[in-house]
Length: 212
Figure: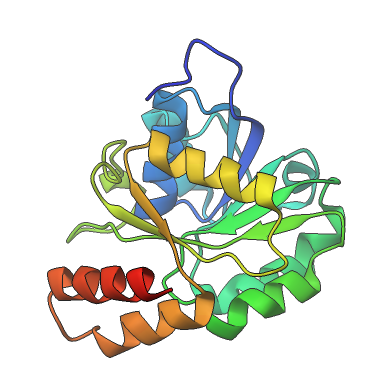
């Protein structure tokens, strides 16, 4: 499904952390026409310049405040242990109705802590795309990385339904198979099966979803 010939799903997307996942998401957003403008935010200018040359982002910023304030979607693609400090840094700059999401593999209590830190007029939708490569970094970004990959959304009772639907549509449009889980169930499943093949993890997830 492509939205390239209609109004983009998002006007202005900021991706914080332009590595393999952040760069691949930027490429996929642009290829599918899901965003009018994609901004990459990071600390290494040479890395961000490479992302621009690759077409993964339209522009970049070394500090987040202005870019975040103009965005209707902000995606955290940095290590999960940086999420709370990131939001403490720029959360107050978010525009009303802005959506914050992520690509991290840890949810659990982290989701509730993020929700508590965000301004009340903004929304968080947790996402975990199960995708990757042996090689990391934006140089190996691929617009097709998420095609056929599982993506787990982790809504809570506080999740805005419209925001959840928009994030789900994003991941479905870039080719992911999307399902939802409670954040704590997500961490239990992936913690329990982290030493097993992915097929076993998917089987356990399917069983848990059926029981819910």
